[in-house]
Length: 338
Ligand code: WQD
Image (cartoon, rainbow, N blue to C red):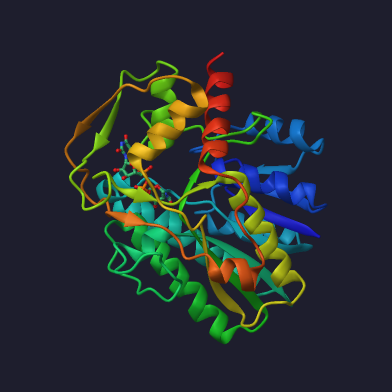
């Protein structure tokens, strides 16, 4: 089986390519390398012993997308990671996000609708829930008005797929709503490579730990939570990668109940910012320098997944603990700074 992974050199994409290859799939990666380094290919190859095919392509060029599918008629499935994902940047450059995240999705879906059968996995996000009314969050929780154009592109992406699957029965699709991905492959050959100052908590923690950042700013400790800091569902990136393979197999093997399904992918456990810091201190043996500052605009108080549907219907469950995931992030940080 041949699988196209768009954005396959990225953080979650590269870990998913590894798991696909481990399961015997042939993988072809498309990446425009705008937020990923071609050297990631070496890391993937070192882990699996197989170099995936790679094409550097800008999926915003419709003719290039059509040409790719002309040359790769034997694609059985697509896992679509390629997208811009910086929440703050999306507020500054909305059209860049709508063109890149929506335009490319439409071009790929149009190609897949030409095939007799196509399996499609969409990289979505818990961002679609905004601040959910109840915890843990189920897939039936209402989708709330997006806080950012980035979040809106995930909501719109899901709607576009849903509307297409309603009229194209040959298209089988699953949206995976990620909670907070973190960590790195246990081999420390691939991991998160944030460009510039990390926006996300975990890479900022490890970069502070290694001395690259002066200290971590904790964005507010006056939230209505047990220790006052925000709560998130931090999921180990290898667990998340494996969820993509399980979801893809569900479609390829025709096990899906409907031709469009949605699953939350998280651990089901919420951890506060301070608990994440304590986890880092436990696994690294280092004290982390941090200070409490004001809240960050757009942050929700808490978000963690109800994983019942993923555990029972999809048949996938996160296996790694926060400490194990944090340890992998720290090992990776130490390795790349050597
Ligand atoms: C986590 C917590 C911050 C940095 C984002 C995207 C989401 C998804 C995951 C793509 C929050 C706090 C953070 C820092 C801090 N990305 N924090 N100091 O915002 O939950 O989700 O990444 O799909 O779409 O929105 O993740 O890691 O930025 O923040 O105190 O320097 O850590 O306030 O409570 P977030 P995050």
